[in-house]
Image 1 (cartoon, rainbow, N blue to C red):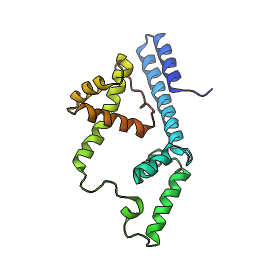
Image 2: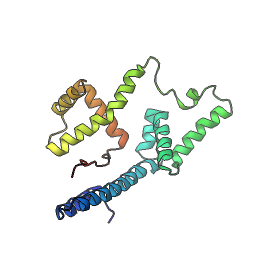
Image 3: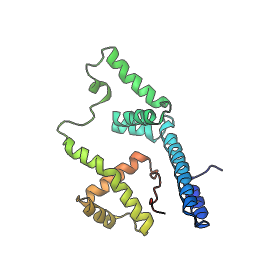
Image 4: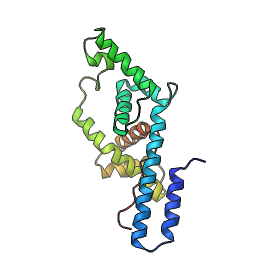
Length: 190
């Protein structure tokens, strides 16, 4: 049976509960974080490497080049081979430029943002999107709160944005992650 992140966390908590030695607790924590990060990377890798009949391919059709370049960036950051669907999509666009079928990279891969997009708002939303996602997940999992309009209202107030924008950014980040939770981060004080 494949090791899961929940099993790794449960094992860590069980081991930690049996020791009062601070050095041993710190060693267990470091060991857990390394294992959790490895498992998280494997989950992400699976998400990006799936074939053309999966959600990533649908994202490519729906979001244009953003999904393609996100996959290529992920592969570059993690030093894994670019999946076939992304390599094919990139090569098709590159060949259109190389053969002068199109005049610009934007024509080959679509514009990254539609005309008249407020890029400063996009930058701000991108910057807080992950924080919003993490805050909602923390309140949901730690406080047993439902992910609903009331939760988005509360988190939106923390970030000085409205409920609907908070909800939109949360679900946008969740879709980008493919429903995978971020790597667990425990408090540094043990």
